[in-house]
Image (cartoon, rainbow, N blue to C red):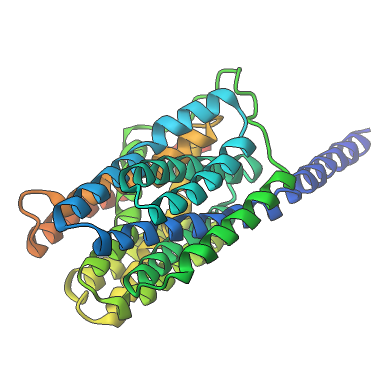
Length: 374
């Protein structure tokens, strides 16, 4: 009798796994389309920002970039909260790509500020919609987070590079690509926000865990976007694409590794190598690429950590991960003492606290936390 019940239980468990796998498999193409759309959307933003240097003075350019960053990065968390309330992601994703096409058209007509505002809003909505689909379709699967997020920095770099080279055909290519992706999303499968009307279960995480998640997000997302922007302003176009490719490879590799190996030792090892590489060897291309790739490889595991902290609100998690964390990380570049030595000291302090959060073993772990830190 016991054996028969055991067989029925095992069969039911296997059936549930197969059903879950089959149900989620239909979202794989959607995540890939959204990932490519992420690249095209950020490429359009990079092209728009890069084009400002040809059509506006220094003050106008700086103001426009600031406005875009506030809307595109700071607007993601409110957009994520809103999308979780409505529970639908297809229409926001499609409309955001349409907004990027409109922004490129307005730029060619010299409606600068309207184009900046529409591009920033479209970017914010697309990031949270795409991230929400990835998280809701594949919960706690970091490799899919890596696929969605990997193309963004590469697109930003390519768009900025095309604008700096004054390649006029880039605008038409971006508009055509965005249109094709827009039509593809109309036929793609999208998940709904699951159980959004039910109270989400409270994860058993303590203050050390909250601190670890926030610091890991700030450190992992601080490097790529702002490094690309700094390289654009420094006119180091030969390094620009290499750094973007390193960030892309890091996210893809980090997403795969997080699903297959214990992530805590990997995170400590990656930080131990990346920090000196970026702190003292950033003037050498090899060390810059190594440090950027390793830091970006922590991005997928950071998103999954936030998902476990805030279950049931995938768009909010996406907004906090891809928007708010980048905005906070970028503030390091604009503090009053923004010298390389000061940034290195600040960076070291953050990582010291992170190590403390990781290595604190003076508390018993619950069963859920043991699984989380395996």
